[in-house]
Image (cartoon, rainbow, N blue to C red; front, top):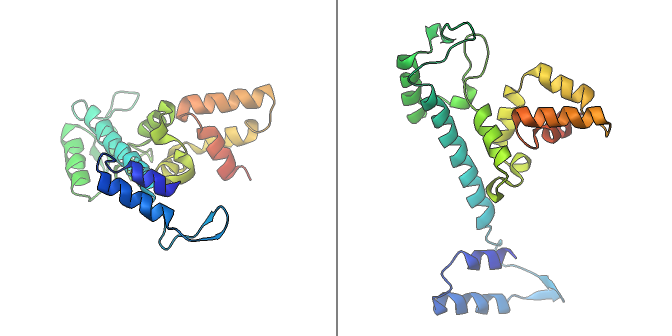
Length: 198
């Protein structure tokens, strides 16, 4: 299956490429009927391409989150600026963060304000989980960057409430999982329960 998937990545209008692929496939030795032995590992382009696309989506999403607040800054409920390193998160500070991110000096998904609240990441993860496109199938099972953001950035009281009330099949448990998924993305509740629920 992996071999056929790798063939699909190539231009099959090129008969030389196609015939060479068929020749290689037909000459693979077998130890018993229906079992293939590969001299080299199968080409697994699909998974690596999917992971690259997921990582690009995350990087682009973090940059968009930063850009969305670049003009107005980041404010608390009372209207005052949130602070980072004692400096208000206004236009100048956010512009500096953007430049540091471009240079690879900081990881936007790890930044917290002086109150300990994360600045970026959770909205992008929620968007990816809610999209439900094939690009994000199995996202929380394989991509550690998305896993870390959920585990680190979801408030601990919300996680504890889910673990206390969201397991099992009761109507209340189903409702708790739905509320959690509505807040943090489809599949977030199942991921947290599987990872932290014991």
